[in-house]
Amino acid sequence: MVGAATRSRLKGLWLRLASLAVGGALSSALLCGLVAGYLGYCRSTGTDARLLRPYPALCRLLADEDYLALRRLVTAEGPDTFATVWDSTDAIMLSRAEFVPTEMYGHAKFRYRPGLRYLDAELWTGVDRQRLSALDAPEIRAAVERCRVFRRIAIETDDLGFKKTAFPREAGAPVILFVGDSFTEGLDVASPDTFVSLFGGRLRAAGLPGVPVNAGVNGYGPLEECWTVEHFATQLGARVVVANLFPNDVQADFPAVVAGARVPEALWGEMFGYLDRLADFCQAKGLALLVAAIPAREQLSLTPGESPFDRRVAAWCRARGLPFLSPLAVFRAQGAGTVYFPSDPHLSEAGHSIYAQFLFERSLPLLRRALQ
Image (cartoon, rainbow, N blue to C red; front, side):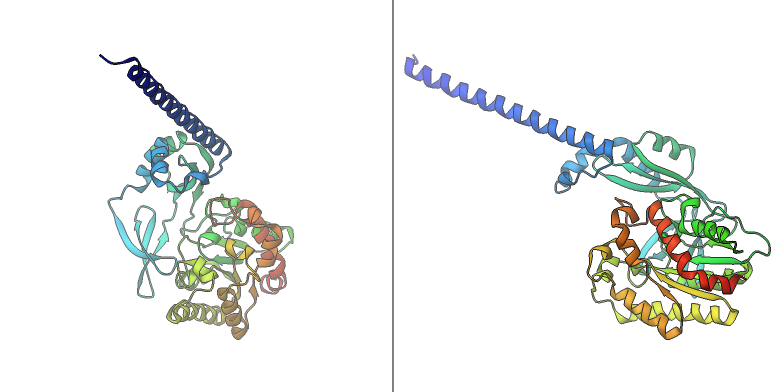
């Protein structure tokens, strides 16, 4: 028989185990409640759940099922893709449904399809905000509707595959041709709110003739921009070309470029080779060429902020006798939170407005000479 002392010890042990179990359950419930409350706050305010990012397994567990279903639709490999290079050095596969394979100077490149309509949306993934872009289709729209959406716009391209502005081309009207990458295209920004379209509004307000054409394409660099000018400037009746550069024009890893990491000299030579070709073409055709360097968000917090990319492009412009513009000081005065999207490296609607004003004011003497 079990003695009284033994029974007492066993009872004490069971009580301690029960206490631990209850305490553990309560702690787990409290932790789950805190995580749920934190995620609910982040989801409602559009704030990334940064406290959870160090735990990838937990992030996967908390992923929003509606977002995952949409992503599967968007990222499903299409029946017809082709290989190309993105942001000067990144290999990528693109869909022929959205892009036209185009040979440029012997390289397999790409252009947007004419008459394209696609959706751009910023969505809640379960732990943060992410942007998705897809061709407009009923199943995509339905999947987006099921998600927590922070921003959604529809983008259209014109008959040449350029992103539309608020100013359709007019026969005989002089054109200001803007070339660049996703910053010029205006990723995540509706057509009327891009700096290209806003620039056109400032032209009208100043009584200057001219139609802005947005030939910016996500993933482009000086090679594609030079090809675009050579193939379309004369056809469009352009008088001014505005080349908007970004640090990934020399190497895809733009934060490394901004930070001063060593970039192979061959890549600098390739970039400036196409810029030389662009400048030569504009000079031969009597086109005014303006070169601007859009700063990365990281530059706003650096001292002095001017990156090796800016310095080398500025030096090239001086050697070629071309105007060089950098909105770095203007962007810094406004603050990164105003100029850029909170969860994306691109310019926000406010950033586009600020840049449009900067470009127009700095280029006004050149515009008056070229357009009148």
